[in-house]
Amino acid sequence: MRRLFLANLLMLLRNRQALFWTLFFPLMFMLIFGLFFGREIASVGTMAVIKQSDTALATSFTDTLSKVESVKTTTEYSTIDAAKEAMRQNEVLAVVVIPAGFGDVTQPNAPTTVTLITDPGNAASNAIFVSIVNSILTQFNYQTTHTQPIFTIDAQSATTHTVTYFDFVMVGILGMAMMNSSIMGLAVAMTTYREDQILKRMTTTPVPSWKFIVAEVLSRLILNFVQISIILAIGIWVFHGHIYGSIWILYIIALLGAIMFQLIGFLIAGLCNTTRAAEGMAQAIAIPMMFLGGVFFPTDSLPKWIAGIVHFLPLEPLLRTLRQVGIDGLSPFTQPQNLAIIGGWIVILLIISSRTFKLHEG
Image (cartoon, rainbow, N blue to C red; front, side, top):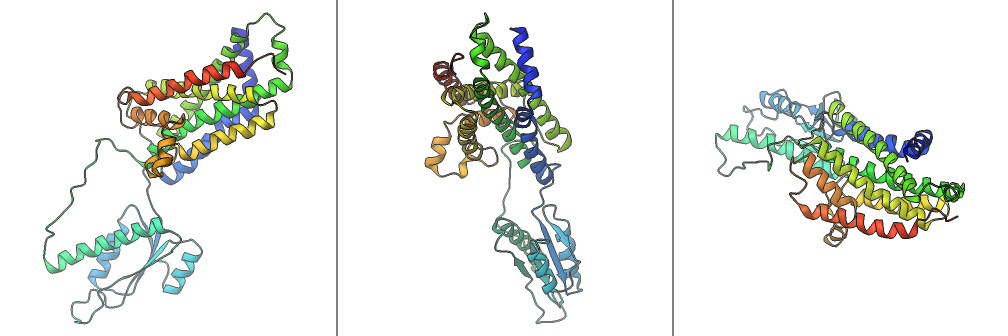
């Protein structure tokens, strides 16, 4: 069995496609999201500022706006037309115009309105731009009229931890990596073995079938362990992600998820006779779960009937448990129903895949 394990591990290392799905594919997502949301950078875009007034209030407005961390400002455009052209070229996402005479207290009819020009194609960013400009003007109104707001908000977080969107995505990519490498990698590998008559030749040897399967699973878990380590290392050390729970419990839960997805891979290999068919079925299973299972966005935003279905799919309870441990710093048994769903899938898939996947087929 030890020789089988080492042989399978060497075959995995020589298989470029397997290495791509196991190591490099999830790293592409890490780099993309890390560049946008890592290092605690949360800029929603660049706003062009056209300052046509030299009053103290206009200067204070531009200074305050430039200190807002979530927005980058630029004053390189001198006219509205030039700024609009930059917006069409996607160089800026919004333009704020401070009209001449704005804030001039010596003129009774001095303009009191700044103009914010936004792109209708960036609705999410536009709402943030409007909120920022409005909050600055509201602050100036209080200072000018010498009044204090009656009703205020005390925004509090449910946790004392610093949690960013990148932290959410980093754990999501961890679960996605376990899913893609296990389902795609194992399903394709087993069907390739069948096409090459390797599985059939295994039945002529004195090695029991279960030893071959266990050696295959263990060799892939080694790669999964390396995969987890690389994702967490890049996420934490390069892009300043946060993990607050036990790192070893996180490893255990992730590897448990890898075993669950490997069973799906065996199931696909048992149902498909060709590599192309296995690739198609693996993608048909993995891709919907990747986008609906909460890898990049919370499943709460889904319609209730879809969320109710996704809640019981393999990936979503795994991600909930990983985030519960990694981000919230809680025990995986805090919400035992998630582990129950994962355990239920493992039992069901083990029963079905053991009946569909046979070494002597082919």
